[in-house]
Length: 89
Image 1 (cartoon, rainbow, N blue to C red):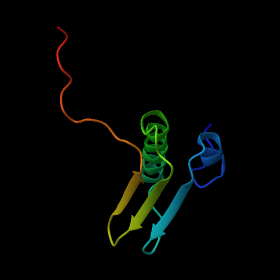
Image 2: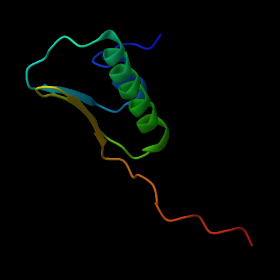
Image 3: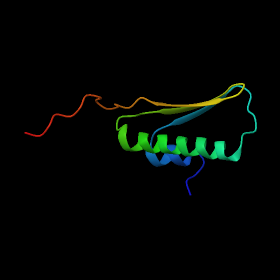
Image 4: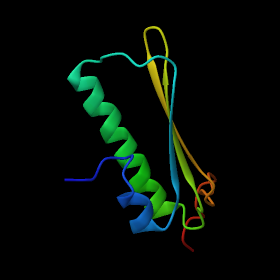
């Protein structure tokens, strides 16, 4: 089982500081929605660890609004080139 996102385990394992921010008034959600948000955050962090080779920090923001929540994940890694790869010659 993966450690909670807010724990120190992920930043220590990947040597990338992680900041978690919650905005708005938190409310009780359906358990299914909580699990989905957790899994999305875990996969986003896994993606940062795999693909953002030069990342020196990552931030997660959970924004609680009247009838919805938004999870934003950002890092300062190199990203990827969105242009299609050249076909082999």
